[in-house]
Image 1 (tube, protein in one colour):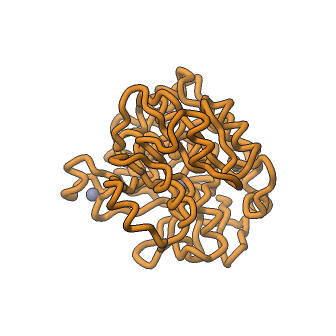
Image 2: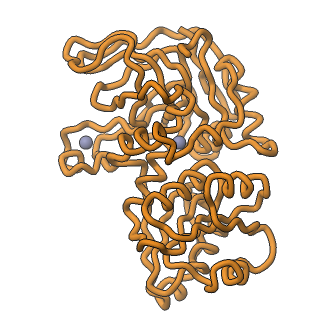
Length: 348
Ligand SMILES: [Zn+2]
Ligand SMILES: [Zn+2]
């Protein structure tokens, strides 16, 4: 088979690789669409230590079951599926509690860190444990389904965050996760959703996806802008979907006393924060990791149109052109949110 292999910082090679062997509980998936995640782009620069070469990246994908292992029941060749990016064991204490995102033995597809290496979906085929699979309804395209993973990440963040019906919710960052978090917050009952980003074209997309207010946070006083839009300079709930010190600080500044901040963005490993502000406002700050049971509801809501992933797809490109796709995302070309890669001859 062909695979896009990350071989060195900033470098990807489209090469011949052995088709993965499947374990008795695996299915072999023919990949139809695989989206490039922001973490892949940060990873290929070599800066995160989470894409140690050589690695086949790709944890946001959809495809067709090609063959099934001897122990697999309920799945057969031809099934259209997507799958959880967290390879959880289904046996440890966390898994038994349903905290599959916190599995003690977890690996992530397309990630190589000091602790583990697990090739991902930027290839013709991927072996996937059958308990990670989710069926895609006929009306949902493979490209849309490849974004179920980030949609589930956003839905998980919204689900673990207390949102009062009708509440004002601020989303800092209008990349893919921010654009999905704004929709997830709405689904969870938010009344007014305010999105902040430094790029106007992303704010326009946020409006198109249902944001009530879009504020360019590149300059000016964001608290004042929030007050002008909602009547208050702070909000009870803020989602942070960037992951650097400056935007976490913005989230802290904009959260009302007693309020909740949920951190989804994960770029800068260590940040400096205003401890006094967090304590004196009695803020609850929580991290949100991957997803834990949100795939099914996301697939259902993509199918019925309440959750939109298609508008996030800026380009679809052949997997063979992976290097160019990564370079375009790294250059942060205007208007680019998501690129979906399709292997040669991928199913439609
Ligand atoms: Zn991702
Ligand atoms: Zn486990």
